[in-house]
Amino acid sequence: MSKACQNAGRSPDSVDILAVSKKHPAISIRTLHGLGQRSFGENYVSEALDKMAELEDLPVEWHYIGPIQSNKTRDIAEHFDWVQSVDRGKVLKRLSTQRPDRLAPLQICLQVNIDREPQKAGVLPEQLPGLIELAHSLPGIELRGLMVIPKPASSTHDPRPSLAAMNELFRGQLDMDTLSMGMSADLELAVANGSTMVRIGTDLLGPRPD
Ligand SMILES: *Cc1c(COP(=O)(O)O)cnc(C)c1O
Image (cartoon, rainbow, N blue to C red):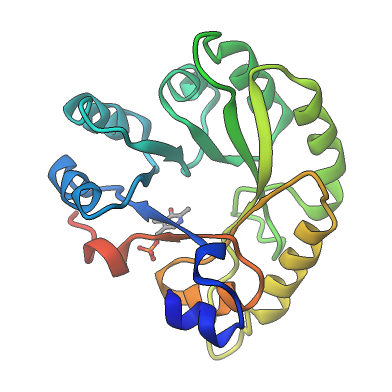
C-alpha cells in the first residue's frame, strides 16, 4: 500500500484498507484486529452475524459489501456500521427506517456499475443523481461515497478508463469523502486513480476456504 501511494504521489494515510473477511473464520479477524486492523468487510449477512456474535468483545467497524436482498435490510441496518453496496431507492428507504435510533447513522456508499455490465449490481452513472438526492433526504443514514467493482483486466480489457471515470464521478461530488475502489488484483491501479479505500481479502488473509 505504501509503495502504491508513493508511486501515485499520494500520502500513505490518504487511503484506508478494508479487510475483506468473507468465508474466513472469526479467529482470523481477531488476529488481524490484534495487529491494528479495525475495519472488516463481509458479503453474507448470516455468516457475518455469527462472527459478530463471536467477536462481541472487539471494537470492529463492520462494512457490508455484498448483494442486498430486501428481506435482509433489517439485519444489516441493526448490525453494520457501513453499507457499501446500496444500488436502489427501496433499499435506501428500508435501511433508513430500520436503523435503530440508539445507533449512529448508517454510513452509506452507493455502488456504481461503471462498466454497464448487465449481470452486475450497481446503479448506472446517469441514475446516480436521483439516488444521491434521496440518500440526503433520509434520516438514519449518512451518504459517504461511491463503491465500484470494475470489470477485471484481461487481454481484451483495460480497466484504467473505468477507474479514471469513477475518479471523475467521485471528484464531482463535493459532499462525499469515500471512493471505495480496488481489491487485491487492482490495488495499485485503484490508488493511482484516486481511490480512498481499498477492499483487500486474498492479499491479507490468503485464498478463501470453500
Ligand atoms: C471479495 C470481495 C473483495 C476482496 O477481493 P480480493 O480479491 O480477495 O481482495 C472486495 N470487494 C468485494 C465487493 C468483494 O466481494
